[in-house]
Image (tube, rainbow, N blue to C red; front, side, top):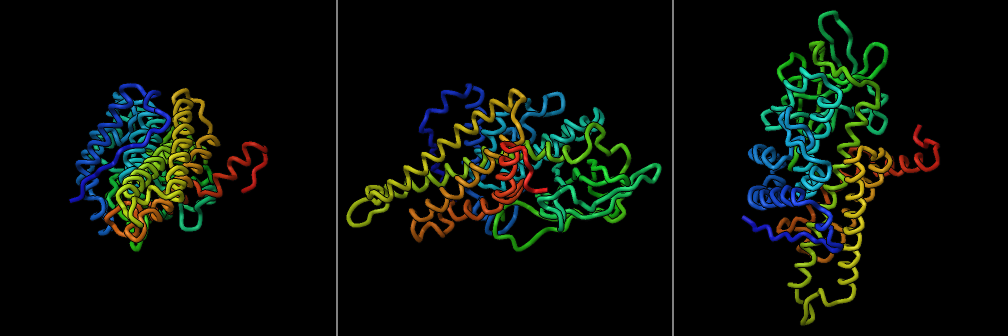
Amino acid sequence: MRTDQFQAPDYYNLDDLLTDEHKLIRDSAREWIKKEVSPIIEDYYERAEFPKQVIPGLAAIGGFGPYIPEEYGGPGLDQISYGLIMQELERCDSGLRSTSSVQSSLVMYPIYAYGNEEQRKKYLPKLATGEFIGSFGLTEPDHGSNPGGMLTNFKDMGDHYLLNGAKMWISNSPFCDIAVVWAKNEEGRIHGLIVERGMEGFSTPETHGKLSLRASATGELIFDNVKVPKENLLPNKSGLGAPLGCLDSARYGIAWGAIGAAMDCYDSALRYSKERIQFGKPIASFQLMQKKLAEMITEITKAQLLTFRLGQLKNAGTATTAQISMAKRNNVEMALNVAREARQIHGAMGITNEYSIMRHMANLESVVTYEGTHDIHLLITGMDITGIPAFK
């Protein structure tokens, strides 16, 4: 088993802006990852399998619904704590962060924000401990960036709803216990429904052949005349804004998570450049290597500052969708660039699984697309500053 030697870069002393609780939460997550996940993640990535045995540990560090109040089983942390946990998880692997992010922002958040008290008490405590694993059904085979065009629908049958349709590219679906599914009613209005494993006509086939996010379980959600109890409809918000509100929370977590992946690549590249000898001296002594490393830490630091400020806005309840989109887009692009430069610094060793670089690079190719593509996020910013939507 490999030893995790990660040392977090903090060029602008951002730790000074964190509370003691923030640092304790982050460091606890980092310690758990170094001990329990880093030694096994490459093996599970190669096997294209999620390490289910880490679920209790993920729950213990606050990885499931960090900001959910204690009365519903969550730790009741603030948004910066949530971001720091996502940063540490993605520093290990984007698939690990995806599992946590979906559970937190796309399953627990809508049940807490849009559900009623009975739904909160029934599902949230079990989701917080990892006893239940959830998935989020929005994307369809023919409707990705345009979720409003979804075909999944449900009909009122008197004493229940009848749900039909299909969702794809769904994290956690192969082993989820519940799914928060977005579908249109007979008037075309979008609503969220909680679908439980075991309901007749509900299946979750796994997606195979992925070359990215291999340590995260991905699949489909298929609904063939599924009878959903009426009490499973989320009553407090409907329309496309409901699932998009969940995505705001998830995209915020990604903005932090991508920094973690970049930090890991930078830390590995810096260490390798000091150890690798060519022409009688460490490659870190060459100007072009120093240029790469200096640009990496500059971009990481800019992303850290951007995201910390966004966390303050989230805590105040004033962060906008467009501000979250900017951070998600910027930080994922930054992380991809850092990973590619780090791969070059590692030379041929950079393509092997002795280092995490190539795995991060492949994972980030999914992160740059999901939960709003790179281009769509750019257009969200464009619409925000001009007032003119370019994607309708």
